[in-house]
Image 1 (cartoon, rainbow, N blue to C red):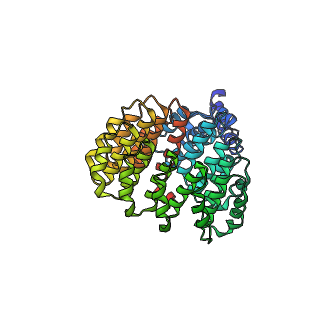
Image 2: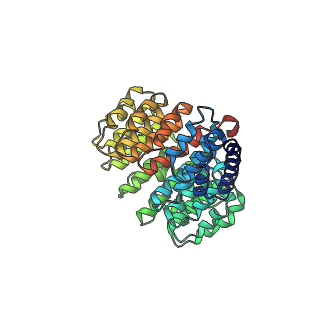
Image 3: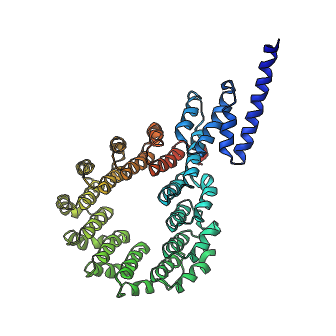
Length: 429
């Protein structure tokens, strides 16, 4: 008789523990939630596994989270995987290394504004300038910058890189209410911050700021000249064409690089001859940006020059030239991406994965899967990003695998893209 009475009492206790676990989860005590859930009988089924999977993610244990998810035998709705991904990202946002927190902050952008706002608020107050900068940029990608007070406050941040990000992002917000805040940047102690605030005001249709930026393109400081040149390209003011082409002959290679990129941003076909000439510049960065701009300008007349650039001694120049050629319809140039996936420089390998995803998405999935086994974390991050952007639902198994990567930055980006691809179309709308 005692044995008969024991079963329902145990069942009631298990149900109580499940309720207590939910309460612990709601107050963000994930350790207590998991401890309580471990006492619940497996017969509880879905509610047990779902809650414990999400709680394990918030503890930073993706392997245990996925194991519980798999207990649902394929019956788990997509939003559970999305919540697991957000949980892991939230955990990584508290990591001691700012590189890991920064990766998680960037990856938040994949979730969309409805899923990321609470976590993003935490990132905007992070002690690391790098993380705060990433958080502001993520807010911009999510179209939240104008609505978040911390982004506006960041225009007075002690770090100039953070202020630059804040002014730039607010300028892209399209929100006229930020104009008074942007005007404060005109008196900033940092010249680059002043320039970016002028760019932001110009983007919000405030008159009279392009002229000051053009004047700065003649500043004695090459960093100021380069920043001004880059801004003039982004503003797409055709009156800046002569300034940008002249800057291709600046004595400073950095300024010439900015000019080569800015001419692509400007979008004028008249820049093609000057950019072809820049393909022979002594500095590889100039050649790199020139090749990229020729691709963006659909410069069919530069195809022969770009094929010559594919033989360049610098790997990144070869990569940019090949990407430009693929954009111009020369599909066989994609073979260069595969060659560069074996380059000794992991930066080149990661860039090759990104180039394939941008220009040849049909081939990018197999390419990215190969890169998932690269010894360099940066290359694996590029592979995860490529899979997330072009792989669709078919990428989920590989992104799950990357969620267990030994490098936490790879895990962060895998979580971000899993959160995106596991979102139902109805949710996205």
